Image (cartoon, rainbow, N blue to C red; front, side):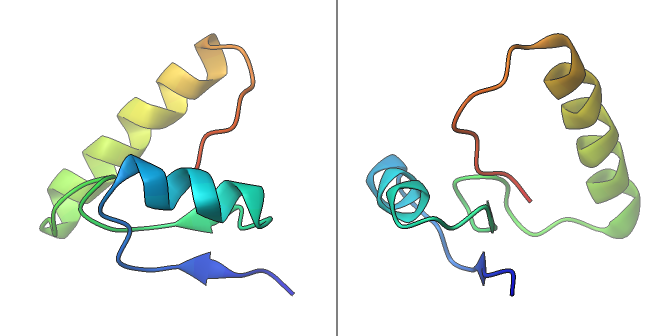
Length: 61
């Protein structure tokens, strides 16, 4: 089962969730609510950045 956490607002929350094994989340820490076109652009941008960066403890949805 995959757990997706909602409402992540602080880096402390993100770190605690990663330490608890949560792999995906969303909230204002990641991005404010967006119209679909802007959301799609954000996801594309982060996918390009993630493929160029070394693997780490990133929690992004």
